[in-house]
Length: 419
Image 1 (tube, rainbow, N blue to C red):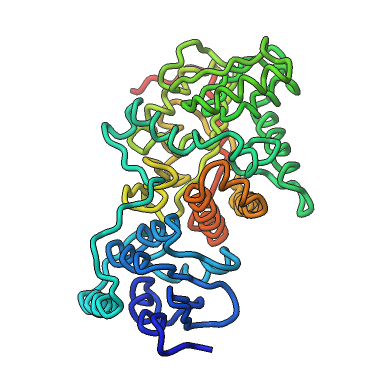
Image 2 (tube, rainbow, N blue to C red; image 1 turned 90 degrees about the vertical axis):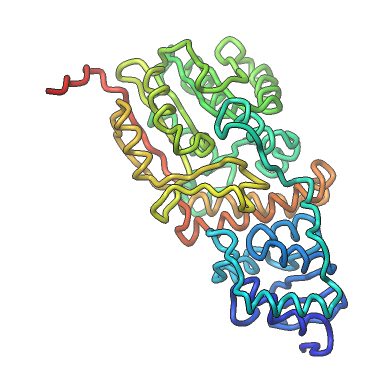
C-alpha cells in the first residue's frame, strides 16, 4: 500500500525524472519509512537526504553509483531484478549521464527544497578515482590496474573461487559448475594455441597465474606471465612454487611494451586488451606480432562494445569505480587492427552468454560471503563489485556487450612487397 503523505510520494515524480522512466518500476522507500510503487519485488531505498543530493548533482549513472557505494541508497532484494527493471532508463543505461530538462530539474529542486535536501555536492565515496597524467602511459596504466586488482587477493579468492580466474568462463554444458567452466576455458585456450612440450608461452595480463600453471603442468610449455599488479604477481609466484613449477614459469611485473625476450611460440592475452585503449591497439598488435615466431599463435580474448563505435567515457560509474581508463572497441575493429599489423586471423568464437553466466555466479559468491567480503575489503568496495558485476551480466544478456576469442597467427611466409 502506498503512503501518499510521506517523503516517498513527494519524491516519486523527481526520481522518475532522474531515472528517465514514466512510472516507478520498483518500490521507492524514503528515509522516513514511507513507500510508493510496486509492493512485490525489489526496493530502491533512499536512506538519507544525501542520496537525493547525489542524484541531483549527478542525475544518472554516476550519481546513482555514488549513492549506492556510499550506502545512501540501497537495493533490497534481487539486484538483477532491480537493475533489469531500471534498464529502460536512458539515464541509468550504458550512455551514462543524460541531462534533465530544465522543467524536470526545477521540479526536482523544488521537491528537494521542501524536504530539506538542498545542499552542496557530497564528496564522492573514497572508492572513486580520477587518474591524472597521460592516458595509457605506462605509469598511469599501472595506477589504473592497481586500483582494480590490488584490493586484496583473499577478496578475489572469495568471489572467483579456487581457480582464481577473473575472465569469462566456458561452460561445456548447462550442468557445468563455474569452476568446471573455468578449467574448460583453460583447455580451450591451450587447444587453440596448439601448445606442446618445449614451447614458450607469453601470458599477457597473467593475473594470479592460473593459465600459466595449467599450460606448464598439462602441456609442458615454459611460460612467462606478466602483470602490472604487484599483489597478483606475489600470489602467482607463490602458487607457482606450491605447484613445483618454478623451473617452467616466470612471473614478472612488467608492461607488455617492455617485453624484449622473444620470440615466443604462443601468446595469450585474456581480458587484458580492454586496458590498452583504442589509440594504442595498433602498437599492442604490432608488439605482440613482433614477439611471436613465424607460425606462432596469438589468442586474444576481450570484451567488445556492440553499439558501433569506440567507447570510453571518464564520467561513468565503471570508469570512476571499476576500470579507470578501460576502453572497449568492437569485434570488427579488433580483427582489423590485428590483420593490419601483420597477424592473420584464423577463428573467432563468441562467448557472450558464457560471460553472463560467469558474472551471475560471481555475484552469487559475493552475496553468499558478504560479511567476509566487507571484512576483507570494506563495504564500499564490496558494493562496487556487486553493482558492476550485476549490471555487466545484464549487459551481456541483452547484447550491449560481447566477449570474443580471436585466434591469430604470425604468418610464416614473408609479406608481399607492395607494387
